[in-house]
Length: 136
Image: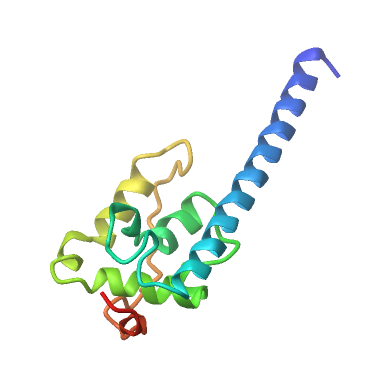
């Protein structure tokens, strides 16, 4: 094996190690958010902040960024919380999943050379949630 080939192998192995650590960190954070949202309405306390608004994980990140270990809709508190945020008056009109998916899958040809946009999932964000149990 040449020095260049060895460097490529070592680089690939290092990237995999960093990727696995990043995935672990992501899911550790989601687990922590799940725990927090079991006790309070919003992640940062009793009022909505910018850090609370994120509704594209299952539609984009799980597939495009290969973060499919567990989907948001598999977390009871996080999924109900996402629906709660989506149902804030005026919020849903600012979210176009088709536009979000077209952007992510169409603007990164190195990650998705064919630009294929997944059909689903079709998540029912307007469906009932249980977040009313926390006072606003």
